[in-house]
Length: 618
Image 1 (cartoon, rainbow, N blue to C red):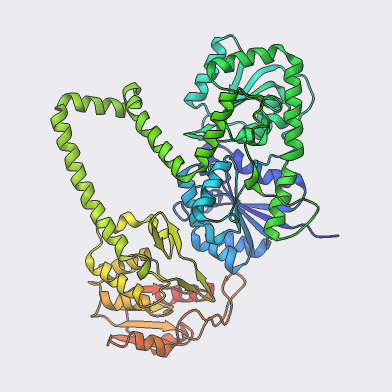
Image 2 (cartoon, helix red, strand yellow; image 1 turned 90 degrees about the horizontal axis):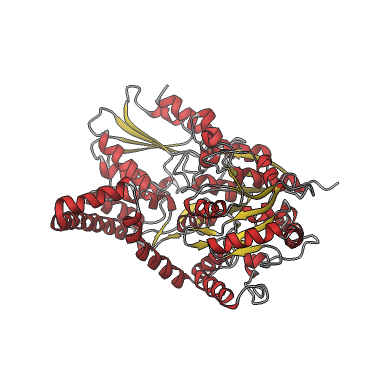
């Protein structure tokens, strides 16, 4: 019997990593949908739960989990900058999983219409086979055009757990059901229904009133009409509720948007509405015309089961990630189109509007321009109509201090901002493309990753750029020279940390030691920053002498330069002493009375790390 592939999900257990918000329904439904398909065996690793239990980041634990479980595929759900929080793996961890353990990795995104999420997806691009993107095919189209690639991002529907979401065929006693976040624009639509005498069952919201997946599905199974909304900020989206409502046999009544119309046919599989007035009219009509409502509900349910099932979703993803083939036809997620035939039951003007909006939102330049224009037009009305405290304070300031004083404060802020920008550009300029070569990791070279308008060897450096604004010229000059001398395994952030540690310990008694020299770049930072103390350098200079099952690196791997090369590189520094061989055996050459003000450990195996700590900090 053929063995099923194994999948490891790396995601949150709780909404936003907070136990008080309850289980994350989006993420738990992902692995639940795969489990229900029976295609694989699957396990989960929750960074937020690990931190909650052990009060430390779960990166090492994830690597151990991969070594023990040996998954064929890792499915990653991430929504924060890698390494920026306790419940997000670092880029180094993702690199180990994908390139050193050689595990196929797929990232799944639910809100890629957010610019922040797009930037995060670009950061992890070298460490994933491809990205599965739900909600917005227009976003996928824009990314493909900006990156000039059609291989790394694929648009999909949202897979749902078939054990929870199905049509029971029972009597429905809820006229209209809505389960989700109580956002103001959604509550406004619900209020318009209630003011017209239509009963709406409204509950839920992961951060407000937690209900389980089973309870949620039961509400949809009891609902004649499932209410849904198709906006996320300025973007049209198709969210999970669309598939949940149709799978449970409720007629979907959804805010008009071009994304849903790419997967479902308006007035055949679901009913779109264009305004609050239109919403009320359609709700009244379909609640009193049972046969028409039931026909549309059955069509939507049938289309979701046949075209957008969890089994089909995961079979396509697994085939692509594991490069296997079966009877499932090839799938191109970028082929969903908003054709005139799909919109034939809409009024002509609304059909043209949706098609124009789809084209605009699929175009990088047009989308950016429209989004900026919308914000520009909207902000004065937001301030005037808002009753929040920040708006009140702003208005009081204008009245109390007059326009003249407010203008002075604005100019002072502008001057300060200009000074900060000058420092910012100075630092960015110091580490531009020409000064930062590729980083050599064993036999692999990490790609230079583009973030915004800047190229960096390590994307995590960009996160901390704001910390470099006050960096002195000495550090900028030193880091620039070191990067110009060849491949450096240190990010700018790591250089900055080491530079500062040497500075801060300069008044302490004792020498400096470094275990793990590689090519001598970090040793040069130490020597350039502190030229009075002895610097003791420990390394085999011939490669990794041993490894264990928990080490991602292999015995015999040569990562750094040979001893003669490193000696030549550091030849101008008289206070440097070399100890080739396996540490701590080579420490026998040290004076028994030697003490250390700073020890820099940069080794690659568990055993050497443990023995180094025991030697220097018994």
